[in-house]
Amino acid sequence: MVKIKTQYICTSCRATYGKWEGRCNNCGEYGSLQEQSEGSGIGATPVKGASKGKSIELVSLKGKIAEAPRYKTGISEFDRVAGGGIVPGSALLVGGDPGIGKSTLLLQVAAKLSDSGKRVVYISGEEAIAQVRLRAERLQVENSDVELGAETNLSNIIATLDDPNKPKPALVIIDSIQTMWSDNLESAPGTVSQVRTSSQTLIRYAKAHNVAVILVGHVTKDGQIAGPRVVEHMVDAVLYFEGERGHQYRILRGVKNRFGATDEIGVFEMTGLGLGEVSNPSELFLGDRNGTTPGAAVFAGMEGTRPLLVEIQALVAETSLATPRRAVVGWENSRLAMILAVLDSHCGLGLSKHDVYLNVAGGLKIHEPGADMAVAAALISSITQRPLPKGSIFFGEIALSGATRNPSQSSARLKEAEKLGFERAIIANLNQKKAQKKAKSQNQLTNNSKFVVEEVDHLMALVAKLAANMT
Image (cartoon, rainbow, N blue to C red; front, side, top):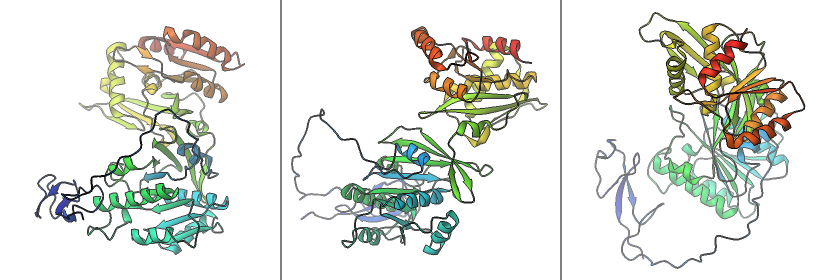
């Protein structure tokens, strides 16, 4: 028998105490200590008398493995972010702001998968069955064979899924993990211990029965999934649903995936019938462009394995304030400050006395430094009030010295630009090792001889080239 020892654990920071105290000395929270038996629960450490354990079999690293099978949902943008489909036995965590469309998307996924003959169970801990049915009617998927349940007790959910009279489901959706609670713990739903225990129990069930589980997670005001960070480590994939309330477009971004590429995105459009797929996001983020507006530059970026063209808009205006304003939407504020300093120091544009506003069109958020040259070109165009050369794209990283550096996957960016009708690419200078590959890729890029690739090795060369070509 394992001897049971009582301990008290803080639900906020997981600090452990031998006796109850009114205030946690580690994080400062009051009334956060919960009683727990040391010989029970997840990660418990048994005291004296515990079994010694048994040896496990070790195998060689080398060996044949079969490719993981996948469930195709029929929603190609979702399948792309998931790595080609949902892997049986995997656990996915989907997070996003309230009202962004998480439940809508997952109900569409459940309906599509059930229509293909798979058993899908949708457990809602936030809404009643009637509310889920109303959403299904709005999405016109009410005839799909999705099994609904409204429950928050974890033991009842596991018992329902383990019903011997029914086949094991292919997919289980839990909406949301913060509402689940285990009767083995005395803490309230949504606390650190409850979220961790519920997540690990569901993940253990998924691995043991080869059932895919999707967990919906709430986010904090900082945009991070609420609850212990260990949940993101336990699951196989973490997907964030992004979007601006003022835009009808939503972006599903993968930040972790054990069965596929990370930083992959899927683009959706919110309509009256739910979330529709956007097959060509570049046309979406470019919008209607006439090429005569100063301060607008087209950036050829990469989101995972997908090339994506997006318009970057800049506005530079004189100010009488002692501290000029710097407003950024969709890009890093610190990165803009660096580009402004380089333009002032090496090009003498005098931007330190101007208000600067920068926006990425369409509500997309750009994280790669390859957008530096497009931002610099937009700023130069705005301050000179002269539009950039029509039909041009920009990409390249700018160093503090003003030197440029070419990002990866240049050929994919150029091919996407040519496909959308652009005729010129102004990019960072390629290094000598890539010179032959560059020439080969340019020859194989397209049969359109009008497409021109121009390289600049310094920010001053970019300013000179734009001054010579801007109308």
